[in-house]
Length: 545
Image 1 (cartoon, one colour):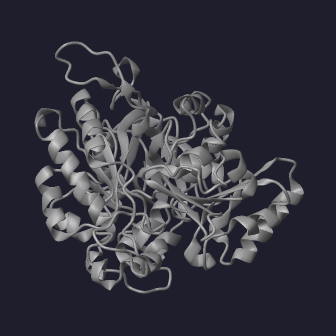
Image 2 (image 1 turned 120 degrees about the horizontal axis):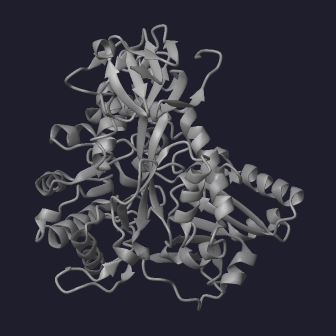
């Protein structure tokens, strides 16, 4: 039999417990058809000598915002600034160089900058143009006066949405800072994002992803939403991008909960809310599919909007719940009964309590429809909550790079007494839970899987300080998170996550074995090539041919 591709003389880490390692891999029609002796007497139209290079399954980022990341690549990247003066200078430079009425950016961090940008300072820098900057968490934004005027929110009489806040000075004038549900009217000024612009954003993002070894991603929320999503017809952009071969990763889409609405169903169907035509988790093909419904409880730690059971250090509040528990329970019950997998965002320990109640009350009465429901982030989990997660059979979906990039901010906001519960990984694994790998990019500046894997092993902040070192895991366990476990969390472990006969030929070629190198070197391991269905989506021509 003539195959499409044979790669020999490689160090292949298969993630298959029945055959952990191999030297040769064969590909035909986009699938792995054999390893080593299974390829006896086979030839191929293309044969590559790997010269000892390391091959693993392609990385799977189970929680990212690809469209938002691609948009950031086309606007001001505020994550790189460490002073407000630098940020204001970048805004002024953009104002002087563009005819657009809008100046947009994302990724700013008030801890790095010293404080949040202020409305009047944005006015001075923007020279009459509209400015809106999204916080690195996406749970806050700052805007200047022309934007507040267009929304109608300059006056203190402007109504504040439940589950959000518009910060105001003592005289009632807005500082420019807007959080959570109050962001809706502000973000709507830039929506819907045109499909062609979204396709370009997805193209740029996926090019970066392919260069980092990613072959699959889950987009954590599309459609109408105050936090995520770019357009009511956002799915069309993903479909167009894949039709035109501009998206270089297999893509699973989470649908934001705000898109659910009343639907007409028959007697005995058991649900009356969802998407038109009964669309649910599992629809789609090998390149584009529908994943979970994305639901929200609270905000984020860095924005001090995560819902805690006691106040943030140095603050007189304990965060924000975006939606009430009864509303979440109702939506979850409808989604669960209709066959949806649920991915419920919950960060603070108060939000985790709510999330667990929602799953217990909405889903347990109908256990036959259990769909590997997930808690996205699961950032602050008390011991009693960990026991409930195990009992309910949920999947926690943390982000390893948060420790490195957000650890110092989190330590300041939570205090040492809550750190032991924060950003768990080892505890989850030891409790028998499946832990996938995700970035939440662009919340993190470096969303590359190797950077996250290094952070999961070292548990060091960007200042080099240890952050709950008892939660460290091995490099192999971190690799498993970003491959087989992510496939399991996405209900795709039958076709993704390992290199075995009949699985997608999605793999990454690296210059070194991440499971044996010094952990401080993992993020610097060179990506030589990335293959999707046996076809290269990225190749370092100087090192791989």
